[in-house]
Image (cartoon, rainbow over all chains, first blue to last red; front, side, top):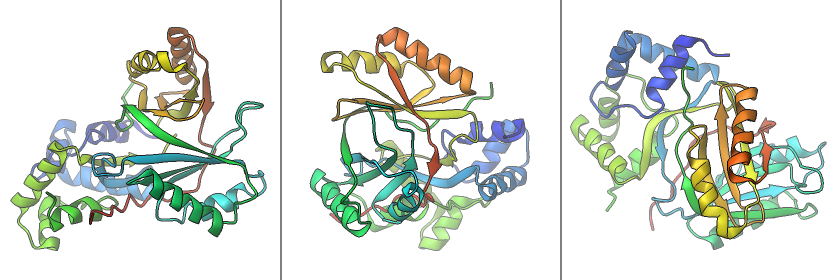
Length: 159
Length: 151
């Protein structure tokens, strides 16, 4: 788990770096640290993998990627890791996770996200995925996004 | 309209934003621009909501616990329920999807107990059941998202 100093740093940067010439110095001031401390600590958190990436977080919808589909597959448990890794190689796949099934009501255990400019593009990309990963035999479903009710990054707090 | 350098700013700094004292100057030097122009371009991109922020993406479940959650809500009550659910600070990414599981959102809580309480409170306030889909395995190495901005 994370220590309190690192958590305070994450909390200070999670809503975005200030767009000023020395953003890390401004964060450092809030936390009563030095600029070097902030930069080194962020570097370490990236190396440790706690920060998955640090950078520009784009808004797909605003940039014309209107269509986003959550595609879910029912893959036998013995093969799901192998197929999951294969699927995640595709450039148009953003996220690829194994999640639990819910008995009788939800049979799918592999979830991936495909963003595209149109529904057609997303469907073409899905076809490519199915052909190249040889997924024809598995049941799947496509859940296109409709309205977005809330979209923001995860909010962590110091509590 | 987006200029070619805007596209570079959008695409090339998703993964490794410079961890230098003057990151916008580092970018400016790489792209042959001025620091001032890079800062004003990012401000513009943020104002126009092309970017939501420049910040960290945290590996799920390293800080607190999170789960994807789905619900089945009659369409005439969906908007109302979504509003109730959005009130929870633990909730983000709340989307309608075209499926009988028609509402999907992510809940982030400090610990399992907090997560369970949040979900039962959502169930109580909306009077519909929640289904938890926590992450079991992550196959993806997040390299950001390559945008094709040419058309």
